[in-house]
Length: 543
Image 1 (cartoon, rainbow, N blue to C red):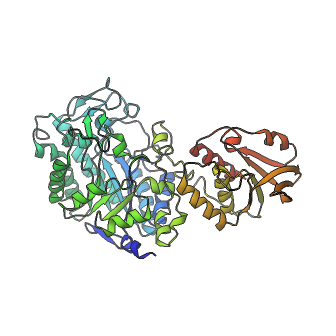
Image 2 (cartoon, rainbow, N blue to C red):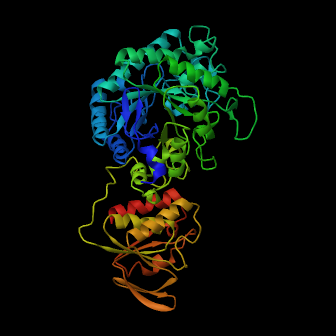
Image 3 (cartoon, one colour):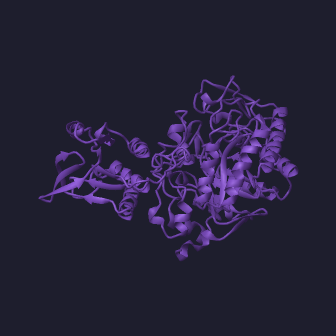
């Protein structure tokens, strides 16, 4: 292991729980559910895969604490109170699996979505908020104010669900959240909280809800049961539905840094065991869910400010999926734990690859949002553009081929190369024929992926023919002109992967000659990176 990485693999205590390293899996709503809103086996496999990959702390995506006041459509958020017995049974399977790899499990519990609710997620017009307001996504939708009695019901539900999580083997919980503009965060912001009861009026009134949740959970689960908080230091809200871009200087209408630091001190002095720090809100989506144009490690300055005023561990995410950056964050005391969200969707073995000095093999997140949030907003199963196995671990598990089948791929673009690697991982012998003088010569916008792909092709001993033009096809073999020399190549199965434009004339010319021939990538029809990679994966899974 590189010396600069050593600090990342030292233990960290959150409350009385010791985490084996400084990596946490960020909470993401990736769950697949049973009929009664418990984690399905697919979700258990998904979380176990990240623990197996070396991540020290697994934080689940949000679990709804109730489904009466704010009624939800079943999607990817479990709800312990729907069927407590089944919930605990399924969670115990998950926690046992995670613990078997030496990792710890924190379950994230959410007060609700509030004005940030995607309208399709809410049933029976049960849109709620601290005060009357309009929906973040559809201003025509009105949210009613929660009653004081309902707030106390939610506090009680938090304690009950935390106890169910503990009984299911969870090592702690994360409260969701004074973060991103969800319901609990709305309570803490003056612009969204105009209440006149004990949950409004002034700063301490606006903080009463998260403080009461902490007290109730500690009473139910014990003072030594860790309770951490997802916490946005700054909201970056210019006005409703309008964010503040990096470099812009607008007055903050949400929570500014000064108030955020006051909150951090009050919340941790009250007993929160750690803060999972970020920035942004649904009114500034690009801060809360940073795309590729945001700088790497964008939350580190906020985490560092919080560390200066609190005495508990500070976790942070925000495009942290770069080994050198993760090491810098901990070595320079910018944060205590690095949170990886989307990078662990792309490569669940990220942490182990760092530990074993194989960081060049890490499949990097592109920060593209296509496979994760893009699919979520289409109400489809969340996954990853560059990792089709994500959230389908059992369904797509590879098995080694009983016989070493040879497969020829015509076209050395991104899809052809990805396919060659996946086939090689199944024990198949792969050959790539490319007419250009190098692979991926069209310049696909994925520099880090290309570097990894080139090294993996070498690792799997892929036979590569460059400057090679197909001249003849016969049963079980092809002939190419490679640098002016005619070569015969064994080809019992042929896959054509040509393009950025649809060019399928070759496929039609040889489809009656080759026994097993498949047309994928842009050769079939033009695709983006996600569609091309997923098509390649689906094909190799069935060869």
